[in-house]
Length: 308
Ligand SMILES: Cc1cc2nc3c(=O)[nH]c(=O)nc-3n(C[C@H](O)[C@H](O)[C@H](O)COP(=O)(O)O)c2cc1C
Image (cartoon, rainbow, N blue to C red; front, side):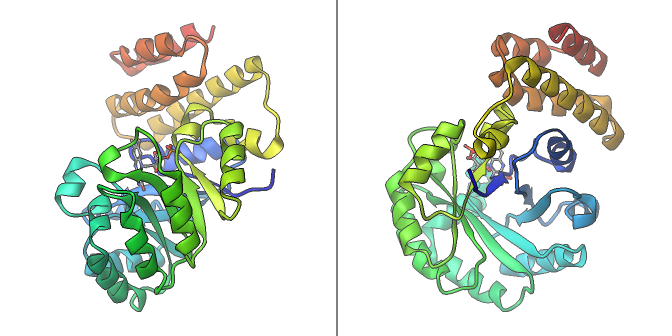
């Protein structure tokens, strides 16, 4: 199937080290949106979004802010590092973020979004894309937002058809997505709950006009998913398990090289296995054993035992 698949940002998991290991071991993903950056992030974090530091996978940085001035300054910084596109986060539902009036909280205020876009549009000289939900409290909120966004140059809009209030669970609102797509004069990407090739096929029939698909948790659980969608077939289970182990070993080694402390590496690997274990037989047991590892050595022994 010919289709565009983007790796979704999952803060804490899909960092540069993860993305680099992912493209080395699995295919099918055309580009990635990186987890959000904030103003106080370190210079090295901004630099890590440069194309040179992300070979093999086009990576678009994302900024979370409600301040147009900060967005302009941070976009210029990313441009200096060679980025040609920046994404604005209008979907983060984390309580702290919403309390600050950022992310999904902004979806209730078309006027604030309009004034933000007015200020930044003429001031940034790289492409702008937007990742948003259908609303903060109600899926109808997006119907007031799309006409506003239509007035500005936006490369694409990624829409997750849940409200901020729903966080990451509960029914999605396909009709709100359809209405938004029909209203939008910009290309639209669908994001949310694509876990199997069959899920995507169903959505494709429902929304033939979308430009592409963004997948987060589905790819973390089953990293073969994008290849399965594109090739129409999947590898046998034994082959998959070998490749998952190779990926996890490589990723762990990469984190050991990239991070300061083994405790941090252990935390990262536990986060990765939270998702990865869900695609394996006995996944719950595997996740529990890995979660209980008290040190990196204990973790490594446990992984060897599991895959013996
Ligand atoms: C732990 C976690 C962290 C996330 N971090 C980000 C983020 O940094 N930026 C963003 O736009 N979305 C973020 N998301 C949302 C995902 O990108 C995606 O929109 C959501 O998980 C729905 O897609 P999926 O069902 O394919 O995972 C995060 C989601 C989760 C569960």
